[in-house]
Image (cartoon, rainbow, N blue to C red; front, side, top):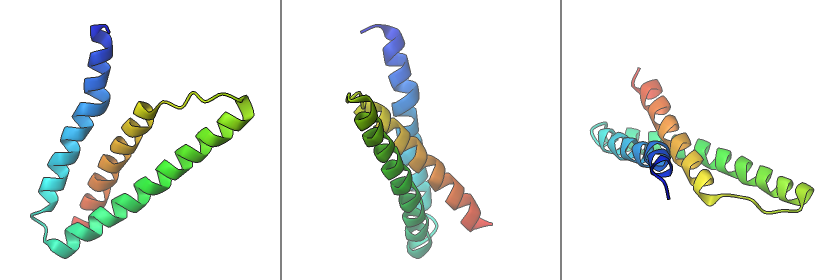
Length: 95
């Protein structure tokens, strides 16, 4: 593998994962009920996006007749979506 690939892996997966861990730790200072509420709201939104993404892949698979679904891409989208949802609901609930 070339270094460009590892750079994209770092940018698209490792950095959002580190940001996700930081955000989850920062939620621990809010209190149990508020942190759980924010995590649940973010998880619901992320699940909805993941189901829509997988549904689109299934439809594409039936239309084109090929299975080119990349699990790494799906995982990256889910991690980024969960990070974004956590940050959004954390800021929204703390105002």
